[in-house]
Every structure is written in structure tokens, then in C-alpha cells.
Amino acid sequence: MSYPWYKVITESSMDLNQGDLIPNCPIVIPPSEITSEGYTDVDFKEIDSIIMTQSCDLSHEKVEIVLVCPYYSLSQFLANLPSDQVRSNKAKRKVIEQLRKGYLPSYHLLNKDVETPNLDEWQVVDFRNVYGIHFSSLLSIVDKLDRRVRLLPPYREHLSQSFARYFMRVGLPQDIVVDGY
Image (cartoon, rainbow, N blue to C red):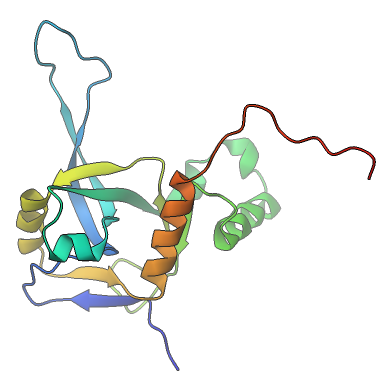
């Protein structure tokens, strides 16, 4: 039995789901400092993004702001790592294997699909940078797309679980030390 990773949506559909890939999604970059004297200019940036808000909240319009995370090609992700982490092919393979096994909680690896537009390489979702975009703005963006790609179950649920695991981490003030073994 085949479990495809993606579905290409070509018809004009305003049906948004968690796992929809939105290329060139404009997001607001908040200013690093807000003064009491007034408003500060904000920056906009376009990112390749994936919707992280739950599909049920989207379909019932229970949210005003939709959460999205950026995603990058694996080669772009590796190129942006500190050089000491990827200085050799062995080091690169180690990082890729850690991504694949879910050992890097800030990231999630999506499979490539040569038959799906713009997914001829593996993609890395970045949970460290979560952005919000107004629901109606996102609908307007999606309406202008010729097509979009949707991550399918069970891979969508796997992404959601990784996202939840990243946010439920708890840092302890003191680690457990086990001696005598």
C-alpha cells in the first residue's frame, strides 16, 4: 500500500489545512525595539512557509491568526549551519541522520518528491521561527496561487507531533547526575 507524502491542489480552493505549503508567504518581522514615543516601522519578508495551525481550527474559522513556520531545502539548511558542524561529508551525514530520526527538536525533515513541483529535494521545517499571518490575508494569498502542495497523513500528523514536542520541552535548573554505575 502506497502512502504518498504530498498532494498538489490545482483547483481554486479556499480550504486550508495544516501542512499546506505556502511559497513566498509575506510575514511581518516585529521590530527589535518598541518605543513609548510611537510606532516603529516594521519589516516584511517573504518566506516559504508551512501552515502549523490545526486543520479543524482552520475549517471552523476558530482562529484569527494562522501559525506558519519557514521551511528550507536540505542543501540550504546545511549551508546555513556553522562550518564546524558540516566540515566533512561524515559530519553532514550525521546531521542529516539526526534530522531524519528527530534528534534535532527545532527542525523536522520532510521527504522529497520528484513528481511534486519544487519538492525535488528534502525540506527542513524550522520550528524556532514561528510567524502569524491573519487568516483573511492568507486566504487572499492562497487565492492567487496557481497551485499549492499539501502534506498528507500520516506525515502531517508526524509534523504536528514534532511541533508539539518542540514546544513542550522543559529545561531543568539542575540536571540529574547518576554516579556509581
